[in-house]
Length: 318
Image (cartoon, rainbow, N blue to C red):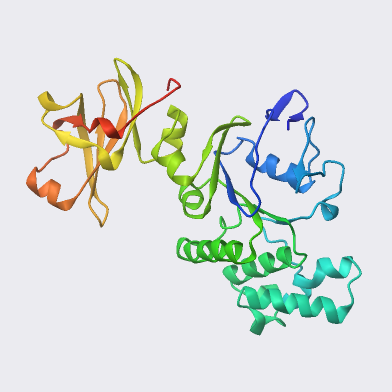
C-alpha cells in the first residue's frame, strides 16, 4: 500500500504479511512511515493505492468500527468523566449492547488487566500505568482480530515501561490475537516482537525475528539503528561487527586502528568509545576481567579485532 500527502510519499509501496497471532513491531525513526501505516490499517487514513486484507478479507473501504481491529492510542484517550468500567464498556455501548452484558464483558477485561477492584474509579484517580491498562482493556473488549498500538509505552517511566511491556506480551499470548505495535525503541521491539519490521523513508528496510534483525543487519542503516554494532569500512566493503564481539588489541594486531575516546562503567562491564581515523565512532564492550587483564586508557591507540564468524557484510554504503 502507498500513502501520499500531496507530492510527498509517506509510505511507499509497502508489502507486508503479518501471520495471525503474531506480535509485530513497526520500528523506525520519526518520519519513516510507521504510524501512517498503522493508521491505514486502522482506517483512520485512507491509502492512496493498494489493498489492506484482514483475515483474507479486503477492508480498505470499511470504517474503523467495521474492520475487526481496535486501536490503542499513545495518549490513551480515556473519557475523564467516566469510570474505568464505563470507559472499557464504551465501544460496546456505541454498538447497542445492553448495559448488563457490556458491564459483564468490561469487568472480565478489567480482571484480565488486574484492575477489577478499581472499576469505579475515574481516570484521574489512576496512575499512568493503570490508565494504560484501562485503555488496553477498552481496546480488547470488542474481541478484535488485531490490536493496533501507537507507541503505547512512551509516556511511562523506564521502570513501569518494563513491567507493562511484559504484561503486553502476556496478554497477546493469552488472547492469541495479532498485535501491531508502533515504536521507535529498539529495546521495546526486541523484547516484544515475534516479527520486527524496520522502516526507513516509507519502505521496509529489513524484517524478521528480533534475533535476525539484530544479529544479521543487511544494511548500514539497519546496523546503526538497531545499535550494538560497529559499521566498519574494509577494502572489501562495509561490514558490521557487534560491539560485544569487538576486541581491543595492540595497534599492529588489529584489523583497523582507532583511538580510545573514553571508558564508561556499565555495571556489567565497560563500554569503550573509540574514534576511527576518518572520524568514525565505534565501541567495544569489555568485561571487567578483560579490562583488568589488559588495562586501557583514554587517548591510547588500539586496534580493533574480531572473529570472522561475527562479521556481517552489508549491502548498502553508509
